[in-house]
Length: 260
Image 1 (cartoon, one colour):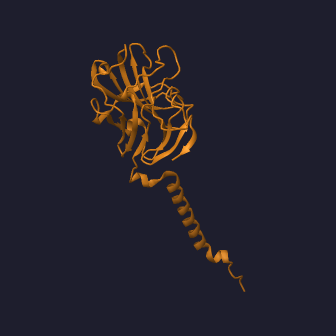
Image 2: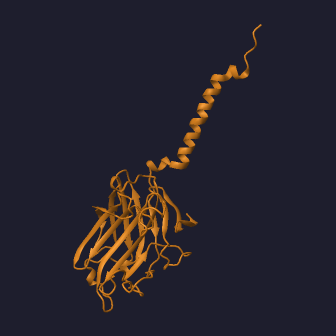
Image 3: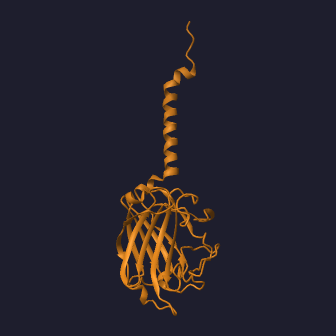
């Protein structure tokens, strides 16, 4: 009389199917946990706020103003970041109107020359790679105005040779605001930035003005809304975000000190 088949032999097809189903379920859970596919269909607006009147004076040579000028247009209020399948949209909001002429802003016995704001993006969230000057960023988004010229130049810069220098620049489109407004919204193509929706990146931002007396920094404000970090600390204000997903953490030198 032949031996009766074992439980394993009897149920082998069902066990195989069950194992495959468990693997599929585990893979789906991993996708939801790590990649957040919901954000491919719905994007959250990210708003990074800053305190008013918190101009800073980084330590340095005589080309840096030890007593930064209180210029409202050089006082960040917030950075708003949105994304769709084609563009990254960044709205820079200030506590004063962007001037039509930099030279029209009164400062004591001096003349303002250049006005620049930026958002630096670190793709790999590693401050030891990319541009050391901009916190390890591989992409730099800028807006610039010069005295006597009411044009606001908006660009994005890349580092294709990974030298830590931004060698390639491209024009970016202003979609709203600009001179005579207290904000400007700019669209940057994702294909040019090398970014994608739901990607995790680290960003930092600042606005800087120069003058006849102070060719490097006449006044400056970094995006930094933390009470825990001194406004004079140049390491402050690194935001780990998920594009279209929200704020992951706020850091100083990428050491997380406050979770959102």
